[in-house]
Image (cartoon, rainbow, N blue to C red; front, side):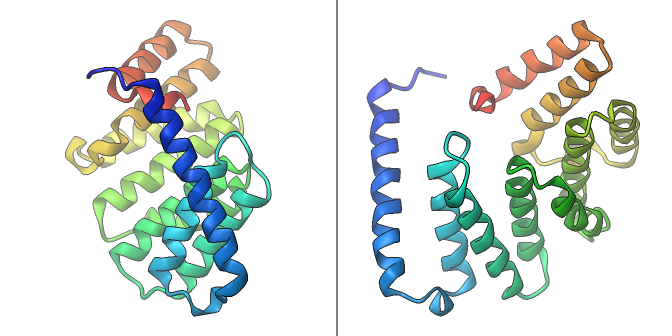
Length: 193
């Protein structure tokens, strides 16, 4: 993959800043109650991209709050469950894993295989963060047994590899951890963020 010129990153950052400042100005004029679920999701994503991971705090909390509000107004179904997983990811990254675990336990029984597989991956991530590496290892083995490789979405391949790396690092199997981290970064260089 060709290298991205540095100025494009700077330009994207400036556009993000402009977007959030425009949204902040509009939020004083527009009532959040008038936004529909899709608009709340878009606004939450804009806040999240602006503040994660370097400026966590009120902005990232605002993103999670908007995502939660959008979820409450959505009808049950595949799209709602997909947004729930995105919300869980925000919660986990905001050190609110116990709150995310409640949703993950529901999503592990999803009728859609890719939703259930991602929920299991998020659970393993939480176990690693809680330093329960033996439990994470067992959950990973169970996932590999219960789900076919095609069930795990391609967009999560690098994430799954990095989680396995975290588990092996916690189990002090450094060569395996390094191997999984290399594979994960080869699959998605942006994962380091």
